[in-house]
Length: 68
Image (tube, rainbow, N blue to C red; front, side):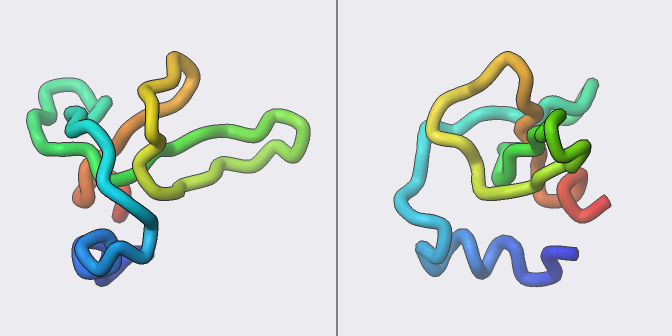
């Protein structure tokens, strides 16, 4: 899905960098690069750039887990 995710993040396409956070997946220690949220009204999962702030109802994912 995001074959060049790292390149897109490094280019600044998603804006400025935010505080480093770890992937939300159990036992994963990699740095998060994306945030997965769910829009209940539309019944849609949304994978976007790492959110500025950690949200309790969102999942921060590393590149490997975001690719899945």
